Length: 285
Image (cartoon, rainbow, N blue to C red; front, side, top):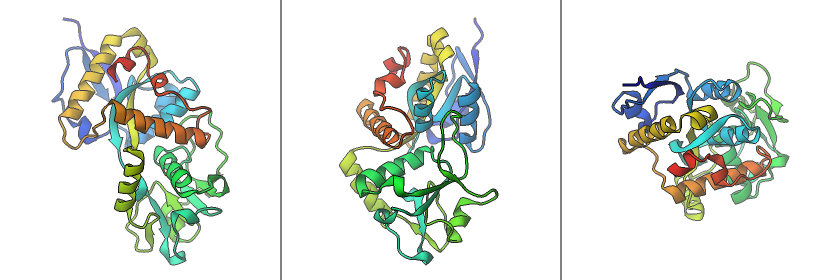
């Protein structure tokens, strides 16, 4: 019998990956060499810049940006993280009441301008609340995973922490964070109601992370890629808490984040969803 192909793999601990990572889902064709990164997003940069893994969890906006620079990777239709985003925005209530529509000309902090959560939230603010994103003084703390992207935001002073800057009044709001600090309140006053209304309007659950494979693996070993997808799908099916997307639901979610990413100039054009896959992975959808 031919030995199984060993694949360097970056995959976080999610409900839908548990059965895969604990060995419950097995294969005679594929073995995963899981590379530990904590948090998992720390591994996105080496995947983008060095093609460090054969299989990798990947933030969808990072993948879109990587595709715009022809990075050698291909998307699989396997979602490992999806969530509503409204609860990941805060302001300092001690500085006065602040609502989403009040963000024009404010100082807003975000870990990196290119995070997927940030792109979703900016899209929501611009398209559903009429916020002019270009008026905001964006303060960031990390560079983009995609080295070629030109980041024009203001970098926070060295050593500063995003939540503490909000507490200290150096920022008016932050995106992509949560905190139990008593002075900090959700930017969206009734998060559950906002999420329900937004879903009713758009019919979309925002996708954060999917899975990619190296282009070389897909071109040279399509049977291995098919097996990787099978294992990911079986692992997701084994958990009732894993994200569930049929073809149409995934299409709507990916189309919307593509739209938001293009609006925000994270990517040069709005890719058709089919273009994110190749001839091997497109067949899985």
